[in-house]
Image (tube, rainbow, N blue to C red; front, side):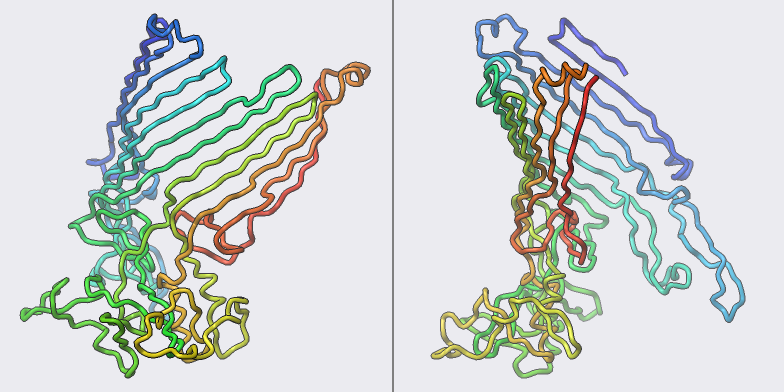
Length: 477
């Protein structure tokens, strides 16, 4: 590492690191990572001296790379075997991991540019920055064909740790803090910060998509993209859910004369042709719908990644009384609320259901016809019955995509510094008493949902973040 500082005005740094790990084979064991950065304290320049309202101003930028090997196990490139007794109690060595000799370091290359400073006798501070972070040679366990054999005696396909592609995050960061009032006895300050970024998968092996449950990784889309059946609403003539048919979906396919798999052609041999019920297809207003989600064709349906997130707060101090409040927030993104979907289903056995089920479809509204312009209601709740509940309440449809917007009252703190005449009598410098409350409330689009639970946007049945009351008594000698 080499650093240079000229008069606290021009600052530069260059570093290089050679990192090695035994997690990879000898040919890929070492990785070279480097960085270069510079900053310019603009407020120290002579042409800035007449700006009396400007206390400090600095421009900084950096570019560099770091490596990651932690996604690999200690013996990730070895072919491993484990003892087991899969054959009538007879022990044998069976494969537990396939060899991965070509796996190498994952690299993250980051560029950032920021302007920071303070104004008006340090009453207002700010930082405004841009960043671009690109992850290349991402480490990922890629599922192999069944012909490679199963792992252990679990019956699941084997995987090989592979460097599969490239992903990019780019966005802006803003932080502000300032004193609204500042006197001898009273200080009121506020703070705010925001991070907004876009995530995109740039490259995948052989440009092929990776599927997993209700998610998809595909080039040009975010890492956490949903792949769901498109729910259109409730057919008010029948009370059933309708799903839009999208023949551009990856779920629609056909085979050519040579038996090769073909996408996005005019003719399809898809599951939609396997509909066995007369009402599986519904034609309405020139468009085709289906009551069976598996016949509709899944499509990319948004992402769990928020548009912006951050915090804001305020602090007050007056004659020994101290007050502070901190809020956190998230804007944008979607949560696939499968927990709510479970409570919106009915079955043959006793089960808990959501109160919203009281508003489920009871019959066609008066005057409703097959051609009524409001026949499909996107805000309605389908009929509650045990026969159609699986199709009506498909948890892997866009029906249960819910806004991830949230606001959390993260912390409230109130304290009091006892008067000095009392403190001095006890031969102390300070005595402070106070109370603090964490997680006073959380506001979300649906009560009980926690958008902060997972980056992937999934939900599980778990306790909400607890509200914690703390009392404090501190003394400084």
